[in-house]
Length: 498
Image (cartoon, rainbow, N blue to C red):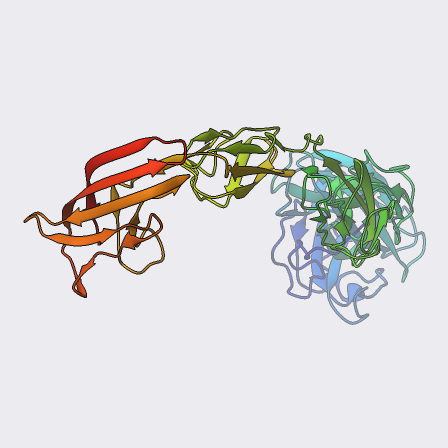
């Protein structure tokens, strides 16, 4: 039934070895030879014959110890034995005692009462002497707390009706049900495992939402997350056996840490995955290694890669990533080559792209703009422009040559020079083409001639008599004739900078 009298003994002196103590009786107690001849008397002893010459019997416990010896009363419902027992409410108890007849006629009929209420039908003594039989029943205490438990003789016959009682016992029923939920198990997400219940004849599993059955012994479990399952069996009196096991579910996870990405045409991107033991990318197109955790993709078109892997638990993992290409920007275009006279500004123009870079920087007003100005060019220069579009992708490059015409006639005098031997503007000289006659003189602020020359290609290096001249403003005079007959007579100043 799932319960057993495994609790502590609640009856005190139930085997009467302590004598006439720990209980009450409505019968009269006596303790002398022949004192049990009158009806309604009792004693606690080992030899019934000593107290009544017709009584025959012996103790049940050991055969030589004490027991309750009774000459039944002729009036009913007299309590033979009573004791207040510490019973708890709403619990099950096993009540038992042993009954024997002292004479072989008119057997006693013993009724169990609790707080005056009868439990079960009266229990009759055996028809022969020297025989013990056991009363053994289960009671449910209900709301009872510390009730008085009594044994009452219902037989009113004066002839016979003599009996012995021994080994009265009341024990709380303890649950002796057993059940086993089986070992903990693990599974991959989306798989199933069979639970292994044992040890019982009936099973109730919970939670049951992901079980194939919850009243069977070995249900199939398909939980989406790690779940602890309980299996139980219920008996009377709240007797319950329960056990549990855990199904660990290895969850899917993102192997790829890069989100979908877009790159420039011709560029490469490294795909990175982790968490698995093996990897397989599909399709393998444009990949450096389709079985690596970190292959390099150099796609020629938009592509979506699917990754499958097996993790350390043997579970299949899946992920995907798309690699797309930015739209191709038309190649950068610079203006056509142009021919200009020396010193004449030229506007350059480039189209297609967002950010531009020009090189070399010689004569340019800016190198990171779309439309730089070539300022006062004196020599033929080929410029290269490169461009990057709004996505950061290269828009290629183009070239434009600004050619200085040899057919131009001109004469130009700089306003400053820096004779510091850096190779740039170290000499003050005329810039010219088509000059047939030339004379130039340079004076310091005291009017002292520090340089003069009749060669248009000659210039002052900032020295006078081998000594560097100080920073400052110097005056010059210039007379020249161009090959078209134009005469030039000019005075001006030049700043020496160090």
